[in-house]
Every structure is written in C-alpha cells, then in structure tokens.
Length: 119
Image (cartoon, rainbow, N blue to C red; front, side, top):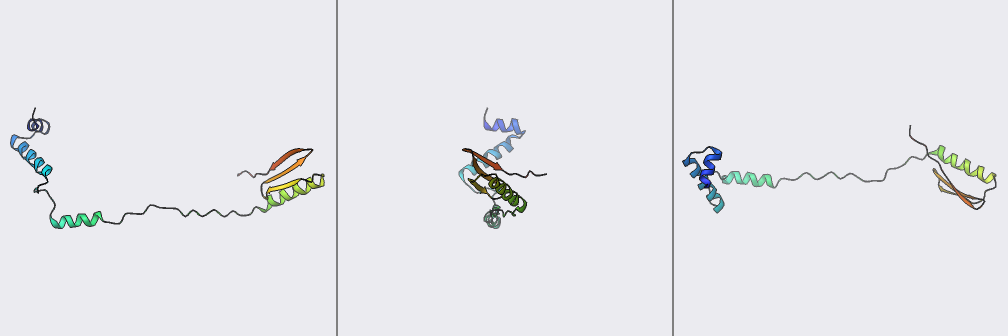
C-alpha cells in the first residue's frame, strides 16, 4: 500500500487532496517555502517571544532560624546540676545548657537528657 493510498484510507482524503498533502510534505522536507510559512513580521514576533525573560526559580533565603532561649529548661538543668553536686558527685558536665547533662557516679557514666514535648 503506497503512502497516497494510506492517506486516502486513514484520513478519508480524495486522490487530489492526498497528492497535495504529499507535495507539501516533500516541500517541507526539502526546506522550501510553502504557503503556510510565517511572514517576516510574524517571524520577528516569534523571535521576540522566544527571547522573553524566563521566570527565575524561587530560591528561599536559607538563614539559620534564631531560637528563643528557654529559661525554665536552663534553670531546671542548673537545679539538677546543683542537686547532683549536693549528692557528692563531682564529675558533672553540662553538654547543652538547655538539654543535656553528663556525670559519672561510681565509675559509671550517666546522661540526663531533658525534653519538653509539644502539646
């Protein structure tokens, strides 16, 4: 089955219309001007829109978040530290002033981690 017959069968074209479509396809493949090409003014407009500024992707400002000091937790860590010192424990280190306390008692290392779960 030739291309012309395929066009006639699949698209329901007449013999003359199929010849016209094939001639147009051949002209396009060879790079010839056709009646459907853009005019000079239209080509200028197309070029203008192709050169249009593209929207820049959004890049968030990645500044580190500033945390508010949690004074009640800080005071609680200090209270626990003073209670341990009063109990006779001397090797106490506050790793994080609002969260973690490490100490050694009877040659065993302990860690107290203070957390305040959200509501």
